[in-house]
Image: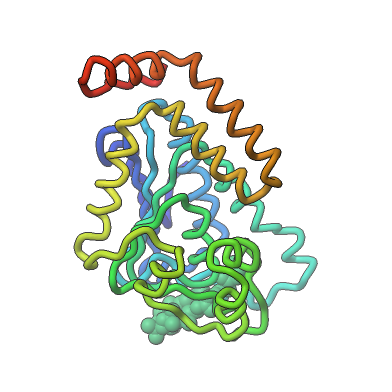
Amino acid sequence: MEYKFIIANFQYDKHIGLIQLNRPKELNALNLELMLEIKDAIKRMDDDENIRVIIITGNRKAFAAGADIKQMAGKSAIDMLKIDQFTTWDQIRKTKKPLIASVSGFALGGGHELVMLCDMVIASDTAKFGQPEIKIGVMPGAGGTQRLPRAVGKVRAMEMVLTGDFIDAKTAESWGLVNKVVPEELCLSEALKMARKIAEMSPIAVQLAKESVLKAFDQPLQEALYFERKNFYILFSTEDQKEGMKAFVEKRKANFTGD
Ligand code: CAA
């Protein structure tokens, strides 16, 4: 697939892929084509044995200002149902490898929902997060009413969804939407630093650990605990477990191969 609205770098750094949303004039508004391209690139990176972590970013002014309002404006409910654009988001949710968002400028509506699909978020001090759909007569449709309250609690989610007000990066950090806020010029390098750290770990352990953490959001505690336990036991069949524990005993750095 040729990409028109994103730039995908499969060798951004050792074991790290980078996807940059690239529709700057429209503030990276997420039209259907752009979302399909993101889905395709993420799937290819997820299937690429050489890649262990994926970073998603935008540009200085916008990570993404939401779904493409101009593309949706004239649609009927049945048009929307037939297009069923949010299944793309479901596919992204299934990504096995860690997704890190590096966010500068606006992350609004679907743009913010895309950020919330990522596993970790580095924000620049210019970042603004919001769910402004209410201002255009609709509501979040790509997970905003569900992932946001799970992340920040009811009253804060209600405020964002019902007033459409934006929050700044520091507020997003204090509410638990963002791991770290850094000056704009360091946003991507800080995400890279985090990605490199994770890329040094055993990729199978990383995959199963990610899968287990996500279970906390869609299963009751006891079932999720059983799931976690099984993943923990499975890791004892990997070479990386043997190497990791041996390296600890021998007081040296582990060399994880992914076996
Ligand atoms: N869809 C389509 N085009 C968009 C867009 C969007 N979401 N956001 C910005 N653009 C376009 C603008 O129309 C403008 O295009 P033109 O130059 O052709 O007029 C261009 O990007 C630059 O935008 P502005 O001139 O508006 O830039 P600004 O700095 O004055 O304002 C902004 C920035 C506050 C982000 C403003 O653009 C804005 O409010 N955008 C819409 C945000 C929004 O409502 N997002 C939610 C969309 S619905 C959704 O996402 C549903 C869902 O749950 C998936």
